[in-house]
Length: 99
Image (cartoon, rainbow, N blue to C red; front, side, top):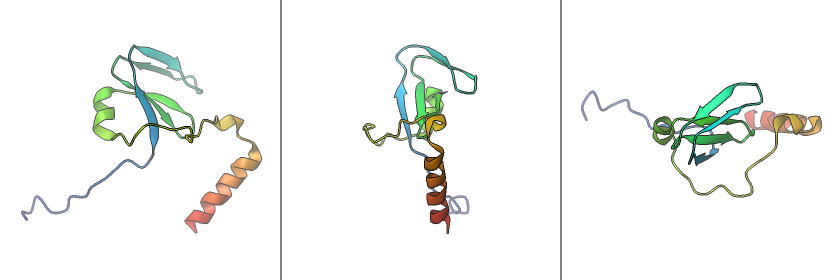
């Protein structure tokens, strides 16, 4: 193994997302009032917390690998509509995993 071949590591993205490729241009404002614009071929990306953004095709296809169709188990809640008791429960569960 040459000196230049050593030290490489394999990486993957940390988060699962749901996405669909745009069949026509799309523009929208997100919950924070930011404008998002996508062209045909770009991807509409939805995170598990419900936030959406546009990813350019070249970047999306370089970063993500399809794992299969999204099913009905994908969370569809809006962060702001989650009851405070549920937020506390979620935070407590995360704290347990970190211990």
